Image 1 (cartoon, rainbow, N blue to C red):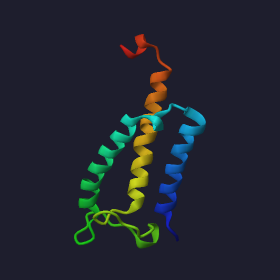
Image 2: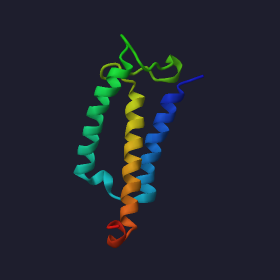
Image 3: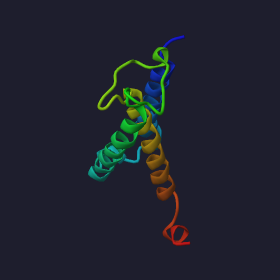
Length: 109
């Protein structure tokens, strides 16, 4: 077995970027509001994930063979940040696409 969580997290992040750049093209990555919101998401992720994954008293355990072993800050596996990026970004991308394809009247319902 080898680094499944790392591979899955990398694939999720890369696919999310490709969905934006090749398929949806919403322009989300060019918006300051997006990067500000991601900063807020990551700040709260550090607080919660740091508490859950701290090595001295973990609530969530990761198999050593499934992760890269890189943990920043407070013992958070770097893979968690990749998945967080993919999950939040893909949600926002799909939201933007839905907003672009609906009329103002449909949004007002």
